[in-house]
Length: 254
Ligand code: PEP
Image (cartoon, rainbow, N blue to C red):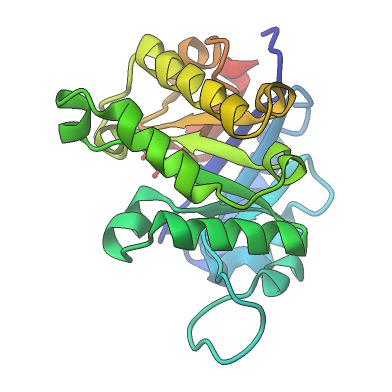
């Protein structure tokens, strides 16, 4: 597929997989995807499996991501994980502001922005998630909600930091529900986000930012979604837990 930006497809394993299961999955992906050069590939295991997966993918084309981090550096923050600790495992990406964290941990745009800034300062690339609820879409408020998340969650980043940030558009109603946004719905919001990034930062930066789609991406809908001009990859939940499904999503997107 001829794309303006290199696709980035990441698997969000969420709170799944023991260390042994994570190793099975990681080893399987290394085997299946060893020849892929056209797509940037990342897996985001739970914290407990970062070390093992990091070793399993060491000499491969698969990069490591974490699912969250603290906005603080090292110190008295019981139960939190500093960006510097993630770097110890050669972690490259960190998912921030996933809708589950916004909903269950009450993460605000302001907190996500502080984490994104801290990630960049430590050399991690944030994958910043935004997306509307079903009632927002039904009341025609998608752009208002997503626009406000984009402004709030990316506040304070320099243009250079923005360029190294991945945005994941994940309509909440499509996450884990089997309901995918149509490729036209995805493209419409992606184009809106890119325009807005042009207003907030500048046109060149906006052109370089990769915007992933997330929400029930599967092997059979990946190609159509990835063929949209402003869709630059996918953040995959459920289907990333299985070697065959995740590999097929990537291979079908090339
Ligand atoms: C996600 O949680 O980021 C996600 C997109 O999940 P799923 O693919 O299962 O809808």
